[in-house]
Image 1 (cartoon, rainbow over the protein chains, first blue to last red):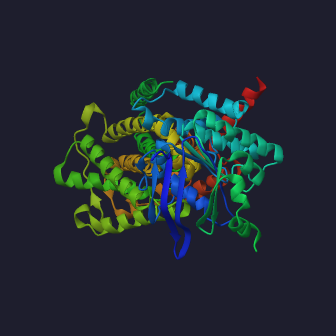
Image 2: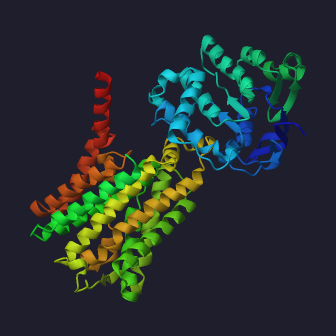
Image 3: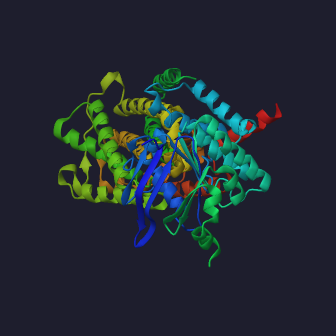
Length: 245
Length: 317
């Protein structure tokens, strides 16, 4: 098994409502995967189950060859599953730079033994990451004062700071202008160079088609398609789900 | 400033305060100062959970009373030295803090605040019905005739102990604030889900925070029976402690160790002055008015003004 992420038979119920029904999903190291589906199809639920914020009833989540189904979220990010949130969740009372210090201090130590970086090392690493997403100018500003697009960049920067193997970007472009979408898209495309696999959840099809090496479609908690982006959007089941009959 | 250096300076300041105060003739000063120092510890303790971690605790009186009653029970049973009672009372309250944190780990905001209030009421009911600890009638503690370390009066000795305990609390608060732990707590305060997803073990850190905060509240109560010499449940669980422990950090500023200290000294001193000049009944009214004033006009407290002033000055230069 060479998959980085291997999800098998994942089922999530909220009371009587089945949000995910025996979903299988594989992601290879460094792969760029697009995850699409109509509103309410279970995309965010899937992200929450993989990142550990929700407990699943059935099924297994394996990462890097280990079963992580019973691990809490903070241990999953320590193993390398980072995520960004659909609605940005900055640490609003601290500076942009300090936002990155949290994952740098808490998420990276696990894989590098007990050695803990010094305050100066953490700062310089944080500045390097902010520089790579174009936020270096804003390092000392309060994160609550950022614009929408900068807030999205901060979300991604904070995820990168955890030095993940897999990044799940949950609608990182929703509500942005066309040129801002391109900025975020460029950032996500650069992840491959860092060796990070990306699951991009998105409604903006232009971005999905440009980005994805493979596309998975969820409809009402079921996986209805998985494969080459152009073949997937030509799939009649997918067209039915989006456009009706 | 490094932690060791800060601790040394704080300890020196404490010792100077103790030595300097011995020239004061009026014993009433020590009574008043004891109360102010007690609030310094209580508000510093409250701020670790309330200010740093973002969990509002209305049960300060419960933890405080745990410290008070640990001392009473120990004193009745063994007559141990004060240091033993201080350590045991702190540990008992810290354990209660862990229990509270564990039971309420899924509660946030109003719900957490209500749970803390419920804890205080439960403890109150328990103590009221516990005959050995004095029950509803209360318990007398006869202050030892011999005053240790050559102090002139027992209250002077207690005041000195309180100074040292305050120094210790402030040092702990500052160490926490600037540590990796402090950054994790601040992340929890800002957004608990995002903190968990940034690798912060939120449950563990919340338990550390409730233990530290609860333990320090208990610490503030351990010497109280010897200060007041007659303790009954209504007094030990007075809502006044909870209200003051919240009001003082809010007025001083909740993001740094200095805020609760400023708030406690300011508000505590005003209350002591009002108590002797006007009437003790006015105390809570004053707290209420100040609280409303600060929440509406300076939500980040006195330290908020200081930070804003510093930012303005930095921009100008």
